[in-house]
Length: 300
Image (tube, rainbow, N blue to C red; front, side, top):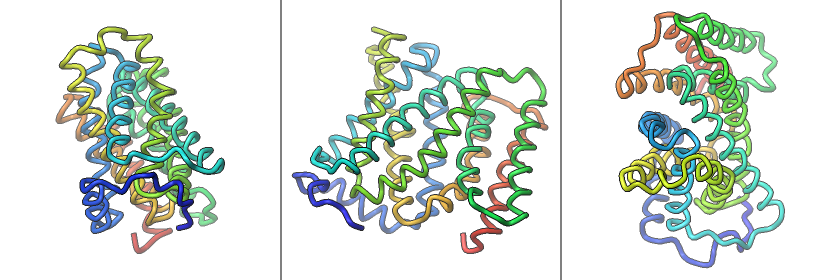
């Protein structure tokens, strides 16, 4: 990997980050992605418990603020980067901040499993992009059918929540592509830390304006730190390491369990039960991604 020497930062890695780097390197990239999936869904469930106290904007602000603080302390990245690298970092951060805002606005209106299933269309489209196989067209139709089933499921599906989840999915697809570029232009967690700082600059003003002093309650701060670790620091670090070792398209395919995991966590942690047709819809999206993985990448 061609990395500008100045991007490595002025300090050597701490023992903690060095150990983390060795640990990540020993884990297969597939396992890194799966661990990230579990972490982010448990974090999303915890975040939903904060909505009553600080709202969706406040929760995003806490998540990104604490994630930035932790990552900056861990990696102590240098600001000395070339213009092209800064463009990638800023683009990554803006997409990350927008994705979080849209997803939490959706999560405040619709169940976790449904929100993630809709959002997952972004990574799935990345996985299918550029394919000329007729079978991949079938997987895309199957995923679309799953979304139709969600819309037709028992109870009213909040349209605004649906649209926010769709916007989050668009950002998620872009996050995968730009995240791969971030991995190529930066080393270790330096680009991630700076990108997270940009994301915080995008989201924190919304949270402060919306929630004000409610954000500094001790229990809210502790919960916000937990959300930051589970939903941002751990999964994004795992994602970035995985994206250094596998193509974006493969990464998108490996996310196939995300909707099912979200629905399961929503059921267990949030007691958000889905109608049988909505479970079928979730499984349609999972099957579409798994089918694309088997057809396009037999070794995945």
